[in-house]
Amino acid sequence: MRHLYLHVPFCVKRCAYCDFTTYATPRGSARMGEYVVALLRLLGEARECGLVDGLDTAYLGGGTPSYLGAEALGRLLAGVGELLGSGAELSFEANPDSLADDVLAEARSAGATRVSIGVQSLDDAELALLGRVHTAAQARERVEAAVDSGLDVSADLMCALPGQTDMVFGRSLEQLVGCGVGHVSVYPLMVEEGTPLAARVDAGELDEPDEDDEADRMLQAAAYLDARGFSRYEVASYALPGKACRHNQAYWTGKSYLGLGTAAASMLSAGEYACLRAAAPSLPDLPPEGARVRLTCASSPDEVGAASGLADLAWDVEFLNAREAAAEDLMLGTRMSAGAADAVVRRAREAIGAARVDAAICDVVGRGLAMQGEDGALAPTARGWLLGNELYGALWDLARG
Image (cartoon, rainbow, N blue to C red):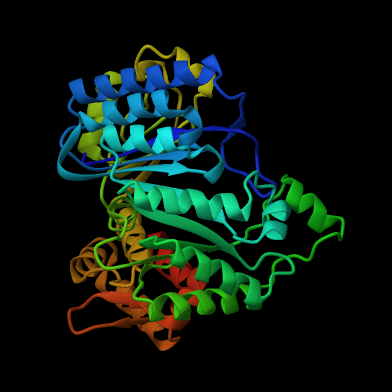
């Protein structure tokens, strides 16, 4: 496999909207150090058994990888760097409050090429609503420091927050672009059950996000960023020329990837799964019709930290047959501005049936959600960007027998 994801689940605190697999952990905790050592041990075994080497991309997500501190983060990045091929992309996520100068310097020295910073807003009232620990001024200063470090810099913004106006959101966009970032991701706020934010919405303290507001903000972001040279290459991602995230593109174009660490996801072919299963024999047999395997590491951070090898990890496993894999590739491809390539469409017609696939394409094109170009690629329209659930749902329905 040419793509690797490592999950670092530690944070200084959980934000009000967060339902990710993250754990508030004291700074400098031995638990984090043990986890890093274990990840390096697992990576070594994955390399020995032929799962990963010569990587095209690797991504450290979370949680907050920058919260590990300069020494531990640098050690982890350097270990991943030993698996990289020539010209590879090595990304890590960071929050402004933990992206200190020594973290940036150590990351660069260890081979990182890219940092993705969780800014979310450049308005202090919105940051307080989200439960973020950094201020707008701190975020601007740390983003500029990251740009000055020579790393490619991406920043995340949330939109359609309760009470958010187009002026406040526009100011966040303007200030972020002014910091010199080459990549911006824009996500509507999701109110997830069980979070402090959901409790406030349920209690009537905050308005639930409105779909029309979400659409307006996404249109606002698209217009502003497009006017400043950013191209929308994925439903939520905009980049200057040459600054698109290659790792994220792998997710949407059906490339295999290995995920290690608590809650890390993997997508493997049948052959790659057999390779992993040789190292972790407790994994279930591949069913005769299995064409693709999706796994999630179900081990806790302490269990990962204590693992001597891949065989000690717990996994949640989902098997996809050829029909489901083809429908998934078709669906995920339409998250990209380039769309699902003609080869993906042809594979879907072979695995699912030409009549069914052609009817589904006719349906989404007829509803203005997608268009099929002369090259045969199925790409989303502007309407398809805004009504993504309708587009993706219609294509995923092809997975059903």
